[in-house]
Length: 239
Ligand SMILES: Nc1ncnc2c1ncn2[C@@H]1O[C@H](COP(=O)(O)OP(=O)(O)OP(=O)(O)O)[C@@H](O)[C@H]1O
Image 1 (cartoon, protein in one colour):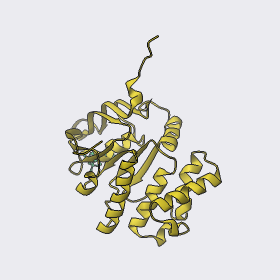
Image 2 (tube, rainbow, N blue to C red):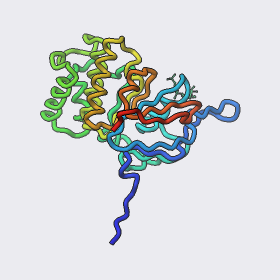
Image 3 (tube, rainbow, N blue to C red):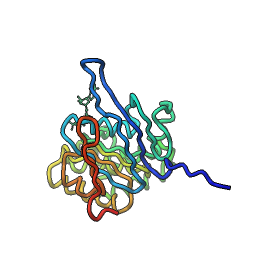
């Protein structure tokens, strides 16, 4: 008997004519304009381009944070563009790790509590979630800051906590929006090192960035212009 192979299952991300428009008539903005994208498991992809070209909107669509106005979108083999809010929230909890420019940590929780929260929400038992959170903080070089509140951490340290948090549900995909946008160059180097580690570990990763140094650690760089792909290149030495 022939087995039907669904190609969407071997792509971590897949879009067809994915579109997000805002406004109508004269005020119509095609933020993402009929984008076709395939990201295989284990690929790290940087998305670059001038301000307003649609990078963040595309990332938000890929993460199920915003709904497309047209086209089709699969994440980890599941079609999500028409998924219910409830199913989408579940998919995000279990399969997607998100990293933002402004960290989005909870101010009243310590570093370790911020990191374990995602795992707890995904249903991990408290002890296992705590163990994993401490391991992840160790991995990002912050084992000695586990009990600190975000207000007692530097920007670079906060972003490293946010990276640990993004990994706490062992996501199939990590999405990062300008992760070094608020960091000085020493902190940027730390984040770079972590992204390089993630790439080497085979983590599927999509990073929106203006920073060529971050893009240089990706396997592939897509340049966007006016909501569409202007260039799509694999970097030398990519797996
Ligand atoms: N809620 C909204 N309503 C109307 N237009 C929007 C909205 N959000 C984004 N846009 C428009 O969509 C386009 C793409 O915006 P987006 O933030 O995705 O760009 P970007 O490439 O990430 O920019 P930047 O590098 O400055 O963050 C822009 O023209 C923007 O003004």
